[in-house]
Length: 218
Image 1 (cartoon, helix red, strand yellow):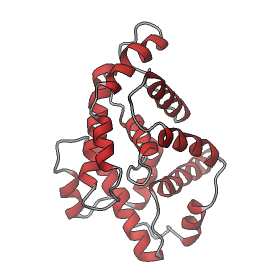
Image 2: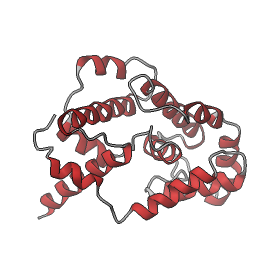
Image 3: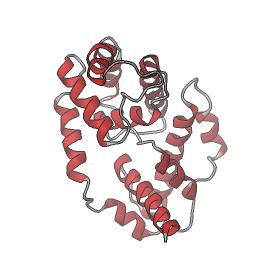
C-alpha cells in the first residue's frame, strides 16, 4: 500500500462533500423505488443515475432512433424482464465481506451482460454506479478516474486475492478493481482503525485523481 496514504487523506474522504445532496437524492430514489416493476421507476433511476454520473445508457454502438423510444421500448422491457430484482433482494441483507464479493461481482456481470444485449457496449461503469445506489454498502463505484487513482495505492493484488479475482467467468476488470478496493479497505482499517464505506473509498479515489489532474495542469 502507498505510504502517502495519510490520516489527513482518510479524514478528508470522511468529510462532507458538495455532492452529498445530489448523491442522497439518488440513494433515496433507489431506496423508495427499489424494484424494477414499472416503467416510471426504471426511467427515473436509469436516466438520473446515468446522466448524473456521465454514464448514460443511451450511448450505444449502433444508435438508431430517438433516445426517448430507446428508453421506453428497449431499456424498460430489459429491466422488467430481468432477474435483477430477485438478485438484489437476495443481496439486500448481506454485508460486505470476502464471502460476498463473488456475489457482488456476479451481480455486476449479470447487469453488464444484459446491458450489452441492448447497447453492444460494455456498461461496466454504469452498472457499478447503478448497483451502488441500490446497495451502497456492497458495490464499489468503477470509472476511469477511480481505476487510475487505485494504482497509486494498490499496484498489484496479493496472490490469494488475485486468484479469487480471476476465478469466476465475470468482468475481469471490475472483479480486479473490487478486490483491490476490498484489499485497500482492509489495509486502511489495519493502519487507522477506520472502515471506509464504498462511497468513502470512492471519495478517496476521486480526490486523489482530481489532485493529480490539477498538478499536471499546473
